[in-house]
Image (cartoon, rainbow, N blue to C red; front, side):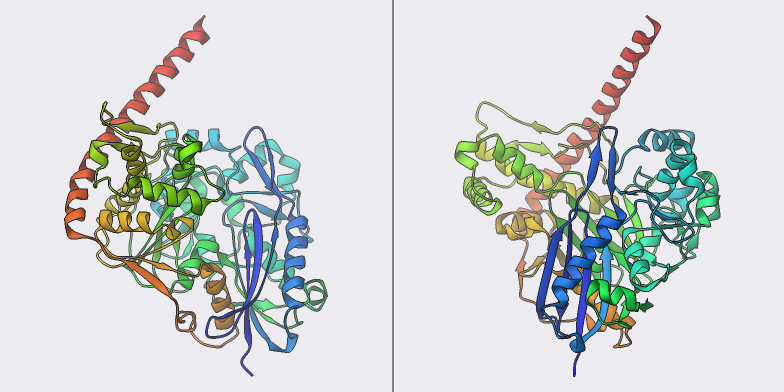
Length: 511
């Protein structure tokens, strides 16, 4: 009998599980919300035992829909980075600190100004941010030294759940990449650890291994807790983004995919990177191949649509995102590429890729007395797509092969066509949005010995392709030049305003 492939996806706000047949058909699903603890000062945490209990409830709900004898493997993907610490007995040491916690922001800024973080960029080709393990370890040692002294092992979220299920502590190549992995050796960089004064943290991290490596099997006690069969093979947990990339069948340099959700992500697979002291974005090793995933995440994606529609609740309001998108699409239909000279810089939440500028501001440029709401709406759709092109340009140039697009924005055909015209290559979307779960399920099957993950992941998929119009692409070349000039000017303006604010504070301190 052909066995079902199970997948578990542990997100920050939701935990999902699914069961797939080998041909990729989803037979059952289960999902529950996951609580996050936030507080002023940048605190963002989760109760580790609470996450575990939710995982158990989700797996139990999935298992009740299945015949246990038909289950063959389990793959896991999860939110990345953060700080999930346990003591010598494997017990949680307080709440997990999440990837989006910002309590270490001032420390990161100081490390960047001193040049100490340059070693991280040269090793992992990743820009340090507050929610990474090194920054959080430095903060914990200073803020809670007694707790820090009891830390025996540091996990990511997926590693923690894998440890609970199997009793084995390990991490995969994608999860282990940020921020200390030397991409050229696949081992943690001593220079990067030393530069951040984190040599002691290096002893608490698991050595990375491919995600299709068998982590272990479900322990008898965990079988009772989850409803899964004892002895079920479990793959080494991976980063949710890496599982999604694998789920799309991608493992070769030159392949690209984009996620257009509330924020946007451009993912470019490459076989090499040029070391930089302060690179934009992040880099992670592919979970199963030798490719490197360049991860560039502009701060604003589809949220720009929500913002603009919110300014016009009567004409652009709707009961759901689909209704709002339909009204926007109708509004911009007759507006030509370039939005009649109006450009939108989509920096509603600052920017983090392809450059880092937390205090850069969004703006419309080119407004005149003749500009219309339709021009502005078209400019919003173009501006968010231009930020994607900007990421590609910063990484060496536009893609020369079709780009896969997923996320909520992939449901908007008008926007997909604009993206294709701006990039100059076909944009391919899928009717299914379970690529992360499917990728994790495939890793589980590979770890169980069923074959190579990249072969097992292939399945029939109903897709839609948006081909670029050559004339519109040529027009958008000039529009992008305009966008880049305005973006560079906005960065300079942000720097000058930052200096002005610093001068004001300095004058206040003297008085």
